[in-house]
Image (tube, rainbow, N blue to C red):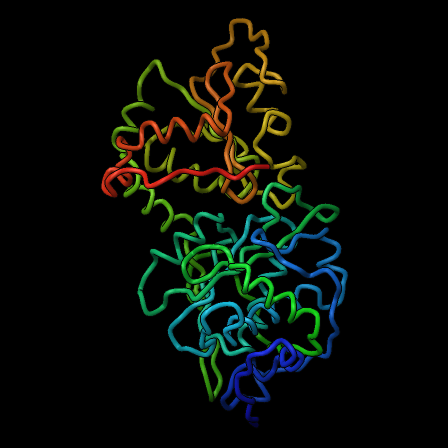
Length: 389
């Protein structure tokens, strides 16, 4: 059995018929069977550069909440609304998917794959265990090969430093083929699509993707093939870091008897990256990495690296929540401490009983940029900036 899909369209009003994004013959049976689902617009689905964030229950319990947003996004990308048009049915380009491991990530990934497959996408790259830090997503889009499979974009499932869990927050954002966040023109187009959507398409019988191990799964019917590749979450990012920094010099510092450090991942996505770099590559003891196991509720904490929420690290470094010194007795305080937020794109730096403000952290990097191989190769810094709360 087969049916013919319509041609691509390009206006927000046409998003009411999302089944018309791709063309070609499609099977009406089997794992790639397409089902049209009737839906209706949901208020408030306006994404910013940080994506769409709501309470987890909104995503999990509101009919088609995630589906409407994903379909509206892919339609905008495929139709070239606010961005260069992408041929979703290209046999080469991939859609990258991953997140910070918070509650509902695993469910969302399966939903995205089913919608993406229905809308013509033939290749997906997904981080092992559904995990990808926000910096790693950018690295993979820009660096991972082969070039003909380069992702045209990515869905990142994160609400950044917001708490995670069934009663807390969930989020989703789209990054483009340059590795950066969706520009305003695209996010505006996505929002307009969410206001008029009346249907979306999915492959309801697409098999569950096993995210627990690296490997490739191929799903086919008589008309087309969809390839799912579960990739190592840390490999590309760590390989890129090796070209940015002098790992030999860093190891020399870490191995000194008068230097000690601790890195707190706050049970966010950065745990595997910290262990890969600090333990596997730089040879440090596993005790260097604390709270390094990603948890869907961040261990009941608030994965925001600041003096208030990174309580364990702050106390270890001999400070209180105001940044004032505390009595540590005879306990040896580490020389260096750092923490990361839930999706791994923000940090906090501390010295022995000393808090380094974000501005000072940036200033230290800027002042020593010529010692960092990447910047040295570029002829120095072109400029610096930091985001404000």
